[in-house]
Length: 336
Image (cartoon, rainbow, N blue to C red; front, top):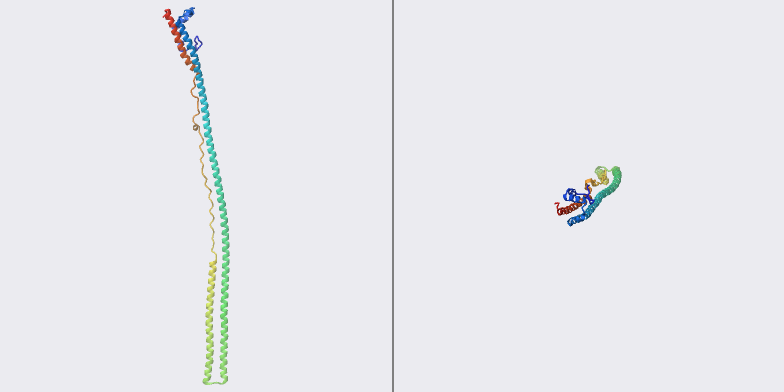
């Protein structure tokens, strides 16, 4: 990098000025030892203006450099802030997803416990109902069997009562028949005795016939009465036997009516179904694009470039001031 006589970097204007006739004349005058006291006031003013521009340019270049450094520092801080905010947003999104996952897992676990509790309760109720049903089935079968036993015993008692009733009635009829037979024999004997008494008295003729007819009539009346009694007794016996039969039938029917019907097989309790459980959907796993682009550092300012830009303008101004001063001096000396 080319430096000028002030120790600052030369710009294109400085380099171009190196071929300026005024500068060449100034160098010639200085090289030949011309005393600066003969420099006109115009040249001195140009040099003072150039020095002022140099000082101002130095301050401006320093300020531009500081401004560029400050801008770069702000850009770096902004990057740090944006990066930290981006990281915090990413952490917050991940934390929120973790919370949702934990909440879903907790709800799923709670739903599973509730379903298991309901299943256990339903199974317990089912077993209880099954025990009641089985006991009721056993009780019904025992009652039915007992009822059958009582029914059979009642039929047996009815049959025995029927037989005893018939025997009693037939025994009564037989007794009546015996009495009737005895009375008939007695009547016959009495008729024979009466007939013998008539004959013993020696009664003959019509009187004997009348006495014989009277005896025969008395005997016939007694026999007719005995026959009537036997017919009535036989009819009463038949009626009694029929009544005994009807009583047996009625007793059998009452026993059958009191008999317990076959209980059959009681229905089994309905087996409980498993409690349906809800299906939970978990949030999807975040991808990189969910967090957005990571912050990047913005455009950085170059402190050297900023200072060089200021120096370029300053040197151009200095060159113009010096060039104007030497042109004035050249005109003054008649070099123009």
